[in-house]
Length: 385
Image (cartoon, rainbow, N blue to C red):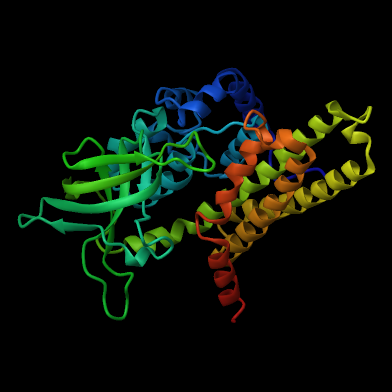
């Protein structure tokens, strides 16, 4: 079916971005995969292309677009090419909404021009060892100095995508104890300079998938953070985090859809070329049926993400809508990718083939941004259950 969610400008961007990936990423991606991260200078190329500045207001060097559809194109083209772009997705998809919504004018002028060019790469640090989905249980603290000029940050974070290369990290920390009737109270967002004394990047985590994303552990020992680097109001951080979750979860749903669509493409190409018993794998009825079933599921995912994407642009995407989209898209994509890997036989298990990397990369979509179980709780609550 013809898609109507994208316009001419989106498709022109798609063409440009696809050519960029084929020229700048595909030829060297195996090196990135082996190294476990994209090189830092690659982000300057993304900045030069304009990818980081699409949704940044023009006065700070961006294009001033409000639509999330350009980022949807990025998700689709990255998966289609069988590559990954390190921590760039977190830089734009997770961090930019906080900067646009809560940064002061002075902060925007300090940070956004560098954000656009890739000179200031951002990451966000929420998860802590032992807390997982329970963000209200975080132990990292930020104590205001007696003279009120700075916070003293202490604690640790884990699973921080982009944590190795980041220049600034939005750290969620307790600036006040929780209240008896509200354990979410007391969390603030601090934009921490990674060059600060006492700030340490620990292990770069060895992950099952997303191997080119520099995911790290971070620790803070008496890190001084100027009050001018607090994002938004003190003690309101948890509310800020919740307001961006629908877009974050839609982004994960879009990523899963893009992976499933790419998996079908990779499998179809493979079975046309691979021969067994003197015939192409594509000629067997089972192959045709499997790929037909996968394509129908991809069509269903596409309908869900396109509807949710339009709702986001129209500012009508609710938390329950996003949870439903994430749950359906990630669970369905997992089935599709697994079946497409099966059609590759033993080669599907070899990282040289993009289907193997897709399989590993996709698994985390049912965990981060809220697990599938958490999504079900949100949906059930919206149903009045």
